[in-house]
Length: 126
Image (tube, rainbow, N blue to C red; front, side, top):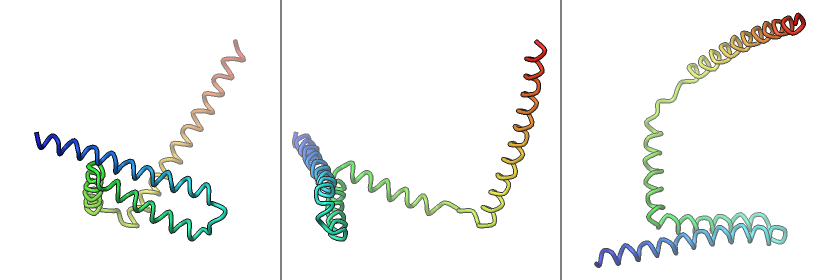
């Protein structure tokens, strides 16, 4: 029974943390809209950064936030494992794609011309 009580209190605290995060983001938007002309841009940026950091901190302390942070770490590790192509491979692949696209474009242009002439011939003879 104690585990059930602890889990339900976690969920209610998660809701409160999400509410705080959403409230901070709404406050950023409303404050920028209301005080957009009267407050200098540097002060607005600093306030935005502080409030956004607090909102992200609040969201990261929830269960879903912790799951997202773990996912982001895993994704970063996977990106490090990727073998990126060299500049020469990238240029060669790009040139091949451009050449194939040009050839396919010419083929389609030729087929279009043939179809236009065939249809014009058929419609004028009928």
